[in-house]
Length: 228
Image (cartoon, rainbow, N blue to C red; front, side):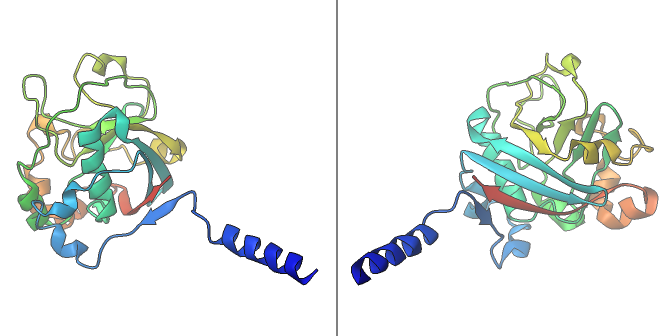
């Protein structure tokens, strides 16, 4: 009888210590310094096959499911930007209601300067811009290899963008209604996209400039990463 109870207890203990289905990835202690050092090897870690990026905003939480097989180069960049806190305390500077939401300019001008020209190679196109999909923005046709830190989410089916070589990296799996509610009153006036050439003041001025000139922009408070 004692042996049976001992065996059962051991099995229960082992099951409790077994592998978890998800792992939280937290920034290292030196993450703030790493933001100014994009050449550091920490930025080149491979993303898990699937990870969830939990984005806390002033309107609520949404979750991006990032699938590495859809675009390994872009997925690795986005995973590390999220993991190391690049998107924390930033602004959703481009919001066109019913079209797209875009972010990725840092709130510190020194960090923006450090990341200028830190482009990644292009993944093969996976340009199916259905509602809830997301991808890196780039500077336009004929200007490939210009993907850097800015991400857009499709707020509607946008087939007009399918002709361009965007690489969709995943989908929103929670909180689409949060994205729909982000403030869109500024339209293209608050920096617009990377190819319009209007982001210089935002890059140089950071959050101080954006909060002064566009105080209604919604904020990304924090992004956390969980690997499945």
